[in-house]
Image (cartoon, rainbow, N blue to C red; front, side):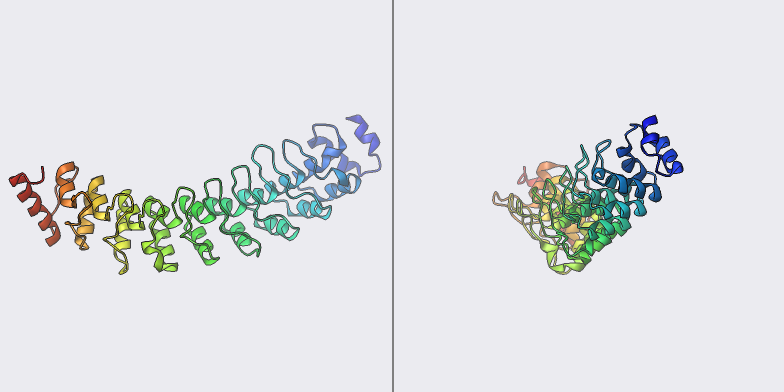
Amino acid sequence: MSYLVSDEADLDKVALLKVLTIMKSGDPKDAIWYLSATGDVHTLQTYLQRYPDEINRKIRGKTAVHVACTEGYIGCLRCLLFYHPDLEIMEEGTGLRPIHVCAYSNFAAAAHLLLEYGADINSKDARENTAAMAAGALGHYEVLRVLLEHRLLNIHAGDRIGSTALHCAVIAKRDMAVKLLLEAGADPSIPNYTASTPLHDAAAMGYLASVERMVAYFPQLINLEKCDDGHIPLHSAVLYNKLDVAHFLLSQPSCRIESRSSDKGYTPLHLAVSEGHTALVELLVGHGANVNASLEDGNTPLHMVLSQRKMKPLSSNTPHLRQMDESLVAGYEHGTWI
């Protein structure tokens, strides 16, 4: 690398020494990339003046802008942006653009600066994730706030399975991200390609805080039906045995406890019995669920309890449960349910 010193003899010798200690290729045009990774703004300015056309050069699949965003070196990033780099170059393999890197690395100031210089806020990486999806899922709330304040953000953009940033925040159990997204206008009723909405996801996964927050913002969605099977959030909570979520949903006056699915015609009580969720059966019956609700084939929850034999003994601490027990005993003794 001795030619580097002779060719650049007019540059500051201390700066050259720094570059020589960090560079591995010996090519002075690579210095911009390596200096962006060190935070040495003064030396970076020197090389940018000498080699401005090399600003988009990739090393290890990344540009200098990627590196500066990864490390959060705002001074270096400002220097690079002055020379108008291409902000939509993707990192090899991951497809990450610099705006994604800021979201993953949790550098809000860098994200703000990139957006000021025209970075595409809705660009997607190789997994079709946006920066907002990444920031929300990772709990990088300051970056998320920067993104949500931008007027061009498509808050309902979908990833490869159609999940929005709100889906991602719910699945990652990031309640603060859910709050920020709802405040910015995110819609919890939008389904992904599997027909699941953020509200149904939260109910199915038992994330009570997110369910409470979404229902508080959109109380009319408590009986939101999935487009594939007609399940409302209560069905989802019952199916996956999420007692706390079911209890909260049932506490809402508008919750339709007798809502039926579009595939099998199941009420939540049918579903609880079919899955053997005894505590949920007691909860539903205690809230007045109809134990005689009949399916097209004539089966009621009472039939299902005896025929499937999945249930543990019920506590019979409510009139409805006593009715179920008495009906089961009578039916069994007379052979009418077998």
